[in-house]
Amino acid sequence: MSYSKKLLLSGAVIAILGSSSLSADMLKAVGPGEGFVDIVAWPGYIERGETDKAFDWVTDFEAKTNCKVRIKTAGTSDEMVALMNEGGFDLVTASGDASLRLISGKRVQPINTDLITSWSTVDDRLKNARWHTVDSVHYGVPYQWGANVLAYNTDVFKAKPDSWSVVFEPMNLPDGKPNAGRVQAFDGPIYIADAALYLMSKNPELGIKDPYELNTDQYNAALELLRGQRKIVSRYWHDAFIQIDDFKNEGVVASSSWPFQVNLLKADNLPIDSVIPKEGATGWADTTMMHAEAPHPNCAYMWLEHSINPKLQGDLAAWFGSVPSVPSACEGNELLGKDGCKTNGIEDFDRVHFWRTPVSKCETQESCVPYYKWVSDYIAVLGGR
Image (cartoon, rainbow, N blue to C red; front, top):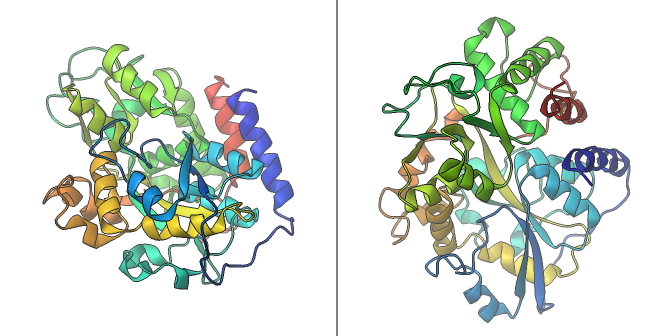
């Protein structure tokens, strides 16, 4: 099945699940582990030292709990939602554009924070974030956060690019060559928000106040920008490792990206750096959420507690280029270093517009274009329509 069809099927399933009665009672106490915990995660989020032996926060967990960690990676939030709809998993490291869909679809269960011993150590800005907290009920444990950065080739850009225009508008880059065929965009409907964020600065007369809350005129302007971008984009990426190869071997010189790719490219001594441009950036504040019918709930709760220990949080931030959800992880972590959290953007929190599922009932205006339209229209953009 094509990725586009999977997205449409996922949207249909979500609509059906919106009226589902599926639910689960919160666990009242953590009992003996069931032997396994199955997690849907972003690439690079759960490491056991296979890529680099210095980065391993799975082995010690398995030894202490006898819960074997099994990982299924997903490249987009829509893939995560589809996998959780299929079931059979315990946890998912969901971004904000997936978490509210999972909550409204009753695919995840409330979390008993009394069973998370280290809950008090979580960043206060994240504890009650609206992408995992509904009616004062928590549906997950904050994991990591960060920005969708502009990655660029330093041989082409001798000075840091200061605007997202280099990937949205046809132009010659500083090396005198056109950007057409040398830039990328993200392969997910939530990328419409990146276009809206750019338009907030470029066309203030549109009156966009929130890139996830767009009326019809604002939304159509974002789509028009994306249709123009389609003519210069070489690939719509969602696989981090394919994007890494494209920067190495396929002539890509600028793209929205994650710090994860940037870090790996730098480690290979490639001339790559990243920046948050003057318009700001979209970003992700990821939450570990528990399936409504998790087959291994005790092991799942053990992992939820493990996921926010300072060592794991700091190591993961060093590996992925993200910011810990536990501020104390920024101190004394050998891999992250003294200034690691600053380098990864801990001071940029207010410049990041974190992913959220767009809904028709919005706060900044009377009504907004809902996510199911984003899905179908972005598929059309990718198809050149």
